[in-house]
Amino acid sequence: MQAAILLFPGINRERDMILAVRQSFGREPAIVWHKETELPAGTDLVILPGGFSFGDYLRCGAMAAQSPIMRAVKAHAERGGYVLGVCNGFQIITETGLLPGVLLRNAGLRFLSMDTMLRVERNDTVFTAKWEKGAEFRAPMAHGDGNYTADEDTLDRLEGEGLVAFRYSDINRNGSARSIAGIFSPNLRVLGLMPHPENLVDPLMGGTDGKPLFDSLAAA
Image 1 (cartoon, rainbow, N blue to C red):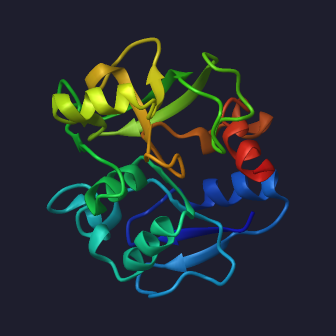
Image 2 (image 1 turned 45 degrees about the vertical axis):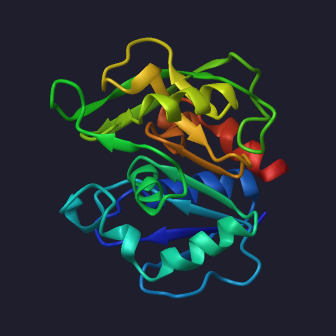
Image 3 (image 1 turned 180 degrees about the horizontal axis):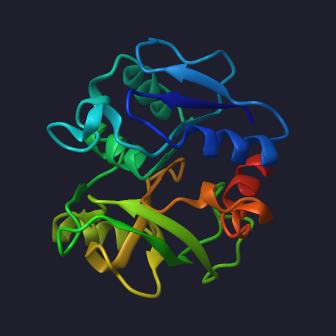
């Protein structure tokens, strides 16, 4: 699988993503500047990493969603290509409409930077195949706007169609509806989540809890 990592002004997690992809895929990802209009030929997976694109002005992810490269990302997703958005990347892809809902200010209005525990809701996807269903794993969180919110009909649809990817299994610190930490698109090829699995892919980082996500993609 060939990955392309998008780079916007203010993004700061691209190096972590490069390391995660390099370790699991055994190859270097392409780095794509937000002003490009096309993805590299042969791109299978587009990754939108975390950070503070455009300084989080207007709304988190709102300005990045208007970048030229996002038209190519939407076309890629519509063709059935894979897309992974983490933290700010999740915010960007909800702003583009690739995933439903919105990420609001955390409950308590405080920036959260700490480890959290996630539960895998299904393992029959290209993102989660290397986990057991119901497995719990540790992932760092670092966000001020991670409170996933959607109307009740949308939440019921996500639940009913099995589109909840991960839930907070210890404490729902940011107030996300139904403890949702990540969701899939209906075709299971777009994943957005708030915590950072890419920050735990090597023992030198303090653990490898997040590595199964990238190993799953590498095996797809």
